Each structure stands twice: as C-alpha cells, then as structure tokens.
Image (cartoon, rainbow, N blue to C red; front, top):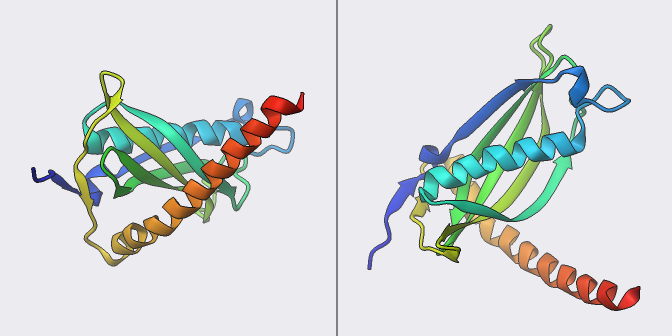
Length: 168
C-alpha cells in the first residue's frame, strides 16, 4: 500500500511570545524550562499537522541554548517535520530572539524532537514527508545521522537506568 505524502512546508508552525518578568530567572533571561515547554508545544503542533493523529513526544535530542533571551525580548519558535519513519517523525525547532526596541535578532536555540503518532494507544502509519527547498533537503538528508545518535543515546540511557536501578 502506497503511503500518503505531505510537503515539509505543510507542517510549518510558528509561535511568538513576549518575554515578561515572570518568565525569567534571576539573571533576567528566559527560564530554560519555560523555553523547553514552548519548544515541545510548537513541535507537537507541527507533528499533529503532519500526522493528523494524536502524537506523543518520544524524545528530545537536545536543546542547545546559543544566546540568552532577555526580559522584554520577543521569542519566536519555528517548527517543521524534517523526517518521517513509519509512525515516528523528527521535528526541528529554531528559536529566534528579537530585541523589540532595536529589531536585532539572534538564533537563540535549536532543538530536534521525535514524536510518534498513535491511534488507540498504538503507533500508526503516518504520511511520508517530502522536502522541496535545498534547506529542507539538507535537514531531511542529515536526519538519518541524528537518528543514529538518538539510538545510541537511548541505549546509553537504558544502561544508565539499569545502573541506577541497582545503585541505591
């Protein structure tokens, strides 16, 4: 049976929010955990748009904080499904900060997450994602390397879980 196909651009999702004092730490920068929640939120919307099924976060590769996001800045998150397996999909998220008073922008963080589409609590087949632009093709082609790292990291995490199960 032929899988449905969807273009990457159909999954694009963006969210912009103003960074206010309750969102920040004692340094006046956005709480890392708050940013991680924003990332998971926008990524889950992109994944659901692609699958048109309920999704769950299977993993977050990393959140690389590249620049501080300060109180008063705007923070914009852009997410897109970059690669699909049978029931899982990788979603890339770019986080940009903007100093609203000057217009200066910076890429503040990058993250890749994996989601699985579910139906009745079980993984379900999703459409294949199709890249069109050079940037989309690069993200799609480099996803296999990220997936290998993800599998190695999961194996290591399982070993650590076994260690901690017996350590205390």
